[in-house]
Length: 332
Image (cartoon, rainbow, N blue to C red; front, side):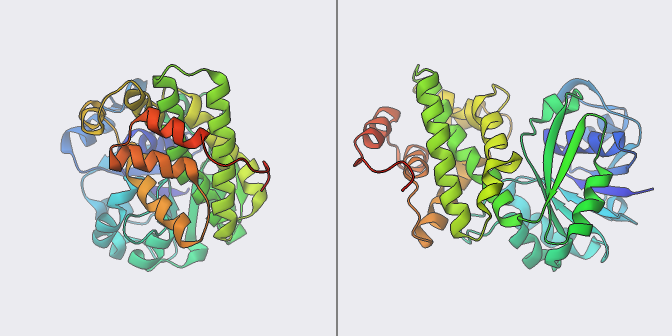
C-alpha cells in the first residue's frame, strides 16, 4: 500500500488527493487551518470544492510530521511563491527515499527558479526524486471524476512510473515524461497567456482574437522552454498545448477570470480583492519575463501582460502595441 503526504488543502491539492485515494493510495493531507482540516476529515472541502464528497482513504492534519510519517510520496501543492518559505520548515521531515511531487505552476520571483529547482535547493532533494505532475487539470472537473489526463515528469523513469501508478484512477490517466524543464515551463507560462486571453474576453473580443493569443502564446512558451533545455515535443503535448487550452478557455480558470476582470476595466488591486484563490500568472509574469530576457527570448505577449499587471498599462494600449509590431515570418 502506497502512502502519500499532500501539503496544501486548496482546490488542486484536494482534488489530487482524491485522485490518489481513488487509485488505492492512502492519503494524509496537511493544512494550516484547523477548521478546514476538520472539514476534510468529515469528507468534504466546502471552501475550495463545495458540494463534492471526498473518497475514503483521505485524512488531514495540522501536524506536518504526522503527514509525512512513513510517506512514500510527498506532494507539494502550495502557492508557488510560498514554496521556499514553507519548504524550509518541512524539508527535514521528508523521508529520504520518498518521491517529491510538485503540483505548482510558477517561477519564483527574484531567483527565476522553477519549482523543481527550489525543491532541490531548499529541500536537499536529488533531481531523480523530484516529479512534476502537470497538464489540463482543472481541479473541480477532476474532483467530479470527469475523465482527464496528465503528465508525470521525472528524470528517472522508474520514479515517474512509481508516481503514475499511485495516481492512475479510472478517470485520471497519467503519461510519463522525462522532460521536467519543458513540463514545468508549459505549466507556468500558460497562466500568463491565460491572463491575456481573459483580458481579450473582458474587452469583448471574439474567438479569432483568443485563438491568435493562444497560438502565439504557445510559440512564446516553446521558444522559452527550448532555450532552457526543454524538448520541443513537450509543448505539443498535455503539459503544453493541452494545459494551455484548458486554462485559456475555461471559466473555471483563475488566471483567465482574473484577466477578464482586467479587460472589463477593473484595476489590479480591485481584482485581487474579489479573487478568492491564487492566480499564479499575476506574480509569475514578472519572473517569467525576467527569465526570458536572461536567455534572450522574445516574449511580447508575456511582456505586455506584465506591463498591465505591474506597470499600469491599459488593455487597449497592450492591443495596439502587439498589433503594431514589425511583421515577420510565422516560424521565425
